[in-house]
Image (cartoon, rainbow, N blue to C red; front, top):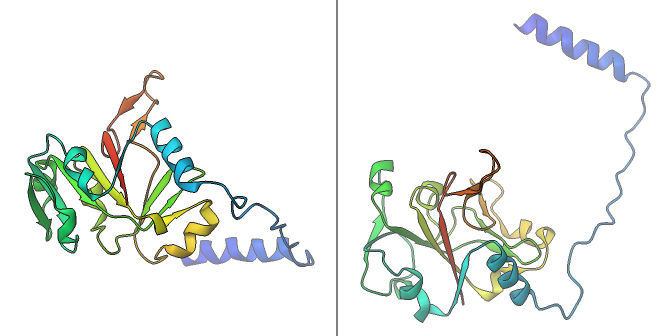
Amino acid sequence: MSGAREEILARMRRALEGAGEAPVPPREYRRALDAGVDITAMLIDRLVDYKANVHHGLASIPAALAGAKRVVVPADLPAEWRLGGAEFVADEGLSTADLDGMDAVLTGCAAAVAVSGTIMLDTGAAQGRRAITLVPDHHVVVVRAEQIVGHLAEALPMLDRTAPQTWISGPSATSDIELQRVEGVHGPRRLKVVLL
């Protein structure tokens, strides 16, 4: 195997001989929204367009979790977020079958991008591991005002680059099968966002 690999690398080196330095790509793309743009309103508009439900304030968490009897939460989820009559089950290595038996998941996030309506998780504080946000059919995510940014370029420095990440732009859906939209194929069918 290593002989074939070395032969391919040698061919690549020969092909690049005398090619010179690669040109510097232009970096003139927009990195932030214009001043005065209401990024929270833009985020809400995108979330609603993606069929996510938007709630406001901690007191709305029980409404966002309506109908859920058992809710999985990251072990470090703030106690003041555990509102309502549901049983909150801290994830301490729950199996996939256990997660599948949960009615919902309640987490925080790392960042939210207004221009695309994308909520980003990087397994940091109050987010838990990826599995808890992908297996239950109903995801309620809390987004604090300081986590909302205009563009992706502003959000990337807020993420842990070494951690697994989940980027959410609305409930999970696909239109691959006969161009019919099917929700819940690759993650939660219902997404509810609580803005603080």
